[in-house]
Length: 84
Image (cartoon, rainbow, N blue to C red; front, side, top):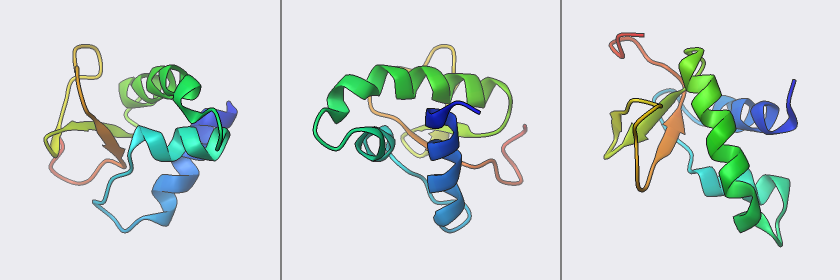
């Protein structure tokens, strides 16, 4: 498993059901000093996980299409009612 994928799933497993994490949380876990350089990789991995149905990408606390979302986003594990 990709280390970014593993970190995303590990961080999500540690938050209460229905709660989300920010991509910055994952990036800082990868590289505390140069975390901003990791954000593109985190986004790409998150999109892949969302396409597989393993996570949900959120915009304004609502599920977003992993192929078209823009701006500030978060991620969480799927919950009942997501339609996934």
